[in-house]
Image 1 (cartoon, rainbow, N blue to C red):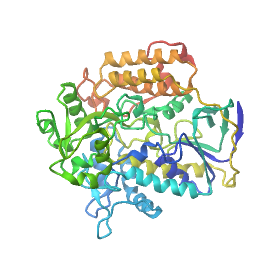
Image 2 (image 1 turned 60 degrees about the vertical axis):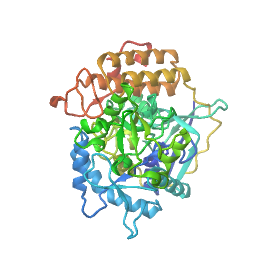
Image 3 (image 1 turned 90 degrees about the vertical axis):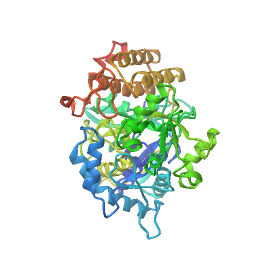
Length: 523
């Protein structure tokens, strides 16, 4: 394998957390590895709601932190919650200065939306439901202008390289077909910011290619993974049959849209005092229950928005039109879909992982902010706060004299071995069936056995092994948590156990001891 040395900081990923961190690392040279064209395909760009921040003078960071802790069902780190919410306003102002086109009122103030489990309106948005896309366009433009950032597009990281307990670089491959040459990139530091795990599920609102591979890379290298069992399912994915499923933003319910079934009943009224604005996990399970009963759950926007949906929420309206139904005439069919992974690579408050030389931020990381159930629109906020924290921490760890670096020139790279589409679909179905909205011991054990068989069927494929590594720690953590808490619901342990009200931490090797034996268990 060819080795290339660079004094650049290697950033794996190209979403909001990756780009914000890369910009913040200036003047230290950065090498960003993006599996697609810059700004395309990242989960951040699909975020509809916006960024939660206490921008209203009547609101406060403390109130935002309390809402975060309450939604997190007992496993949020209170110090992390307060730190993040106290920084929120400054990052909104910084993004505004960079050119982010946030919605503004006639007096110049930010237009704020209220979403589920927030005590007030505090979600800063772009064009109603296009916050992620708007912010990403802004950041991508700034990254392309930045002299200190080099972007390698259509390239994917497949493994971390560890020497003497320190992460020293990454192995990379071309995303498309090409000549044969593998490369090990050795850099000044490595930052993982490559997204979550939604694509491990058959029904997801995330780009389906984002399947936990970056978490899996870290797990295979020996990093500690935290809170892996806590996968958030969004209750209002638009049920069009598309993969991924389009999203009907929570802001619609914040404005008064209702959830109804095929009988026209508002089924949330009998589930929770906050009805449609109950925490996401509760709404998701209620929607899932209606689906299981074949009662066709739907989101009715007709009374609250009517024809305004086309201008106020253009992405939702476009998804409905593309699927061939009219939200002005009928409620929007919905389903609960994998949306956000609260778990990920465990980090400290600076973004440093359990492995020296390795930092993580964004959905790939688990910081202690989200607990068992992420508060709406805290995802982009966490990406900003920890992208900045990682940049500061990495800069402090670098040799201050090493600020110049030439561009990295790659040889013709080998294409990464493609996982069998059949095996990937088997994995996604098994995760949905056994580790989805409602779980139990039997289903989780079956999923672990399925993972073993999937690995054995294509044992040399690094991208597939990265996926199955993440799936393994998710399922094992779900088996270990013998209670129901937040987004994690066990039908065989339906009650919350106060004795288990703590975060979970697990390595891949520990997880492998809990599943059926496989020839790969020792690799």
